[in-house]
Figure 1 (tube, rainbow, N blue to C red):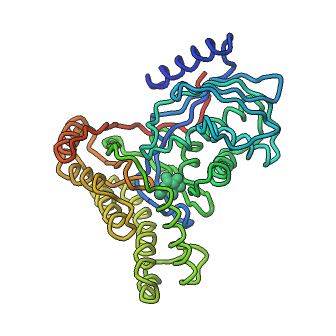
Figure 2: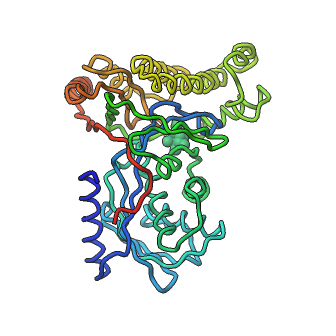
Figure 3: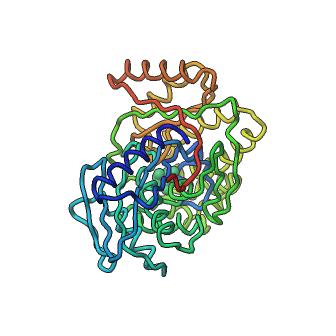
Length: 385
Ligand code: GLA
């Protein structure tokens, strides 16, 4: 077990003992994620290629005899309590809306839950675009599943967590983040078909490191712009007469592009070619062609910047800093955009040099020293104690 998980586990267990005066029955973990390629394709029924990373949300928990849920958050230094039979959105301790939403959706889907004492902590940076919220949702659902023996597949678990985020928290995200946090595999990326929810494991080549660079720019506009992009894609699908942009091939797009208004055309062009890039990048990874994979990452970034228009100055600076750094195959923004992180594929032997140089170049350009993480591909939700 990686040392960071061990430390989180011990921290959660100690805090649980201190709060509830006994040892927890169970400790679960669910990872954050980074998406290698396939951005803003999930809600268009398309393809994505994320990796679960070695940064997690950890929950120590025990059942209670009544129907209450009591949770202490170490990172928020706050406690929340709710009753399973009257779940409403919190206006204080809003961090607990993820747990409330998951408990509600599990029950609405017919699962029988009981009360819980819990302590939550983690080391997924919050608000950096590494899906700390999906990890909280998946860890919560997995905790209930383990404590109350729920009959729930990992795909169903991911879908219920997405529903909690869409309907209870109020963010219209796609399925990618919850899916990879539930189904991730160590040393692998997952190629997910976001329409059928079929997936394939794609090994991360041994000589390559996945490096995440945090711009430290808060993703302010993200909710409103995210929803606006979704609407533009839905309009594009309507105008092209398809169920979702996933159904548009590059040939069909080129034939019909002139029928679309300018902005819609750009959004559609990104999605259509991004889906194609995902398939090409998986083929490149499978044949060990890291240079080809890296070029597709740069192409993805350019498309997100120019056509989808969800990048920002800091993300563009970080990608350009990476391009000049040693050992890099490719770099791009990752996640929803407007700040957050870039993902980089780097020659493993040069990962430390890369980390140092990219951080120095970004700091010189912006005055901000960026956290840079060399990430391992981890397993999805699991019991760790
Ligand atoms: C966020 C959403 C995902 C996905 C990405 C963009 O992370 O939660 O569902 O749409 O943005 O690829």
